[in-house]
Length: 251
Image 1 (cartoon, rainbow, N blue to C red):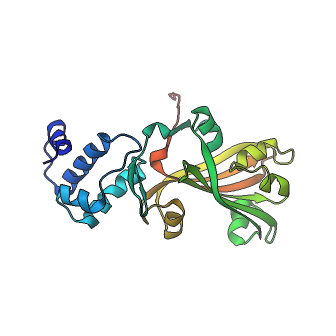
Image 2 (cartoon, rainbow, N blue to C red):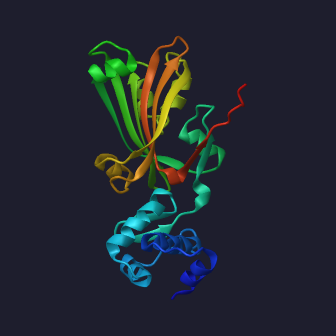
Image 3 (spheres, rainbow, N blue to C red):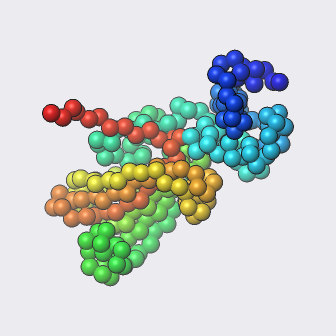
């Protein structure tokens, strides 16, 4: 038995279920590996832990979703620096870029797309607009050290942002652009938050496994006049984001 697994048995209570024991042993190995260092290859790690490679992969998915490790196809699995977690309160609406800047974490925009679309029945109900009204759909990936950590989709009223805004100065934050726009005047956001399973498309986009759990924000941004100016769908890797709410005690 390796030294890391001996430490696991000494620091954790007795665990009888094989899969639970595997999780504990993996937790110890990851905790005892420095950020940026590579773990053993899957065949070697599976042999060391006495499990099949398929069982090992399933167990490692949990730590990948938590942001503890990062698997790179054809290269290996690396331990992630947990200081990279973006912590934000939900009382104030702010962009990922603003949060990252506050904690000195460099973020970048990965693949993005801009589409000019027209409102269908679903968007008519979501944004309270007429059928066929021109809209702009922005999709993009936000990265930390070239690792996708969020997938953001915004649907905006056409004309709020110029083509120059969307092509030259756009680095990922629609909110920051709207706050500078004289036409949008954003005021309040109504947001539903839930945990969802990654669809095949989103899993591919975020380089995770289908069915992995994501934080999903479904939001409508209202202007000061009450008009919905932006409908957004945001998917976050839980391990890279920590959101909290400060609440007062009611009478």
